[in-house]
Image 1 (spheres, rainbow, N blue to C red):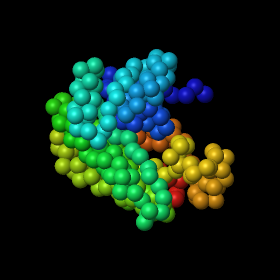
Image 2: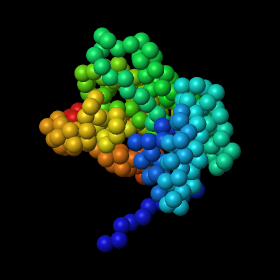
Image 3: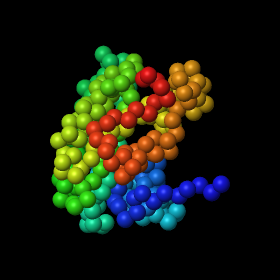
Image 4: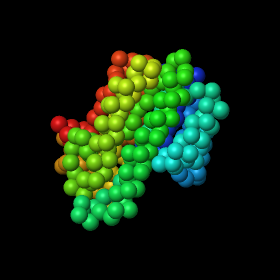
Amino acid sequence: MTPVTRARFTGRTALVTGGGSGLGRAIARAFAAEGANVVVAGRTEAPLKETVALIEATGGTALAVTADVSRSADITALLTATVDRFGSLDVAVNNAGVLRAGPFTELAEEDWRTMLDINVTGVLLALQAEIKQMRTQAAGGAIVNIASNVGAHHSVPGATAYGATKAAVTALSRAAAAEHIRDGVRINTVSPGASDTSMSLRAGETDADRAARMKEESPLGRVSTTEEVAAAVLYLASDDSAPVVGTDLLIDGGASA
């Protein structure tokens, strides 16, 4: 049976922050596979260019823009580069995030501020700029913020502060969604649990170690693939989910059930 090829984003432009690796790269490639012009952003140029090369190798169109989402000037430049190149911003995925794990009482203030700057302030600044652009467009736009099952849904020892920043993303997204849906901007959140990225590996753990651990820890018995999480993001960004506003889609194999 021949797989059905979808092209839900043909002629649209999708921006993915943290697009140089892991989940961000998978999301960027998924958008490109469905016809979108893709802009990937991050603090380091080389991995962004690798993502662009992967997209172009399969016939897609992509642009890499180096940007630190915690800096408003970088966000402004990113949005300008996106619209100048492709003419619109139809979808934005605010995926950039960092994890600083360890015993709560030993968390360094610098690590806390880094997570706040990128995980929370970065989403806020990006949302502000994306909403301002999208509400100037006749078709509006869709935004998907990447939070986590850790925080609003689930607690993990050693990730208390990280969970607090991701819970803030969930709350920020819900409130912004209610405030701006009448502007034609639809905002939702995806909260992944452990997925097949380096962030879900514990110190010194191999992929095989993680697989064995997840058989015991996860009701599903495994991590989610990056492609599975990307599919959820594309659903929330597409017209398939037109009436879905302010939701937080949990994808963690039942860990928070």
